Length: 325
Image (cartoon, rainbow, N blue to C red; front, side, top):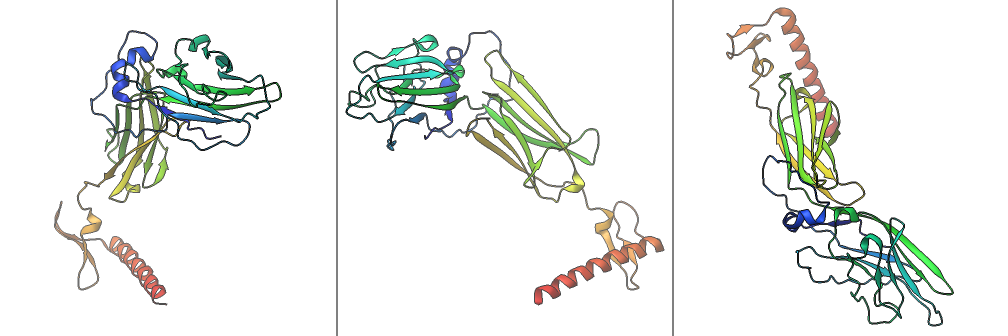
């Protein structure tokens, strides 16, 4: 069974007819800017394999309907032996019957899908395979769920199920970092997504490692079920080696929809006192002129620094010797 998990609605088409693809409610929610994110289309056809071998075919897509949204096609593939009689095909949505076809009769849409299906779409010229596909004219947010196709004859019965997720791509995905207002040593990282369905997951990653420490999340949704979500995280600047990569990964649960934003952190602080140390001819450390007057370190500090430098030299010398070997 080969089942793409996701149907990605076209963002511009959804914005144009958004009120018709969700329940009718009043209310809006503002976003910080109007820029858009490039979205790659995922496959829009679900293939459910039933009794017998499943052939690898490339399904076709009906012409777009009047409002600009492309229909969703779910193809139920099966094999019927020549001697079998009494064939009937049924489609279910969340265990409720929504479509039935008997070759000697016209296909029928049922329940909440009664007026939402394109029942005259043909997938084959063969009499027992012609109207096997489920074609939803205008995919809506509430069409996410579990679909099942069943085929039955007097001699056999089989069925397959698949979970399917509708996604409305985000208008904007932003990643930003700044100095934390509560502590100069901490870096505040913020990732925000605006106007997406369903609610996504947002992960902050620093230097290639998952970052969840000192984080909090803010989620809001409008009347049309469009989500805004922001994830905040703090990290000690001393743990970062400039430059450091910072990224945010967006993913929609139960789908293959993933987006990523990345930026680079550069430490803007001036050189520290440690970087201005110099050794004089007697082996003593002094500070070069900078924020304060140059001066000699006290004996204890000088001894400690000398020990650190010696250990660093010994470590580098050992590595160099190992490399030669």
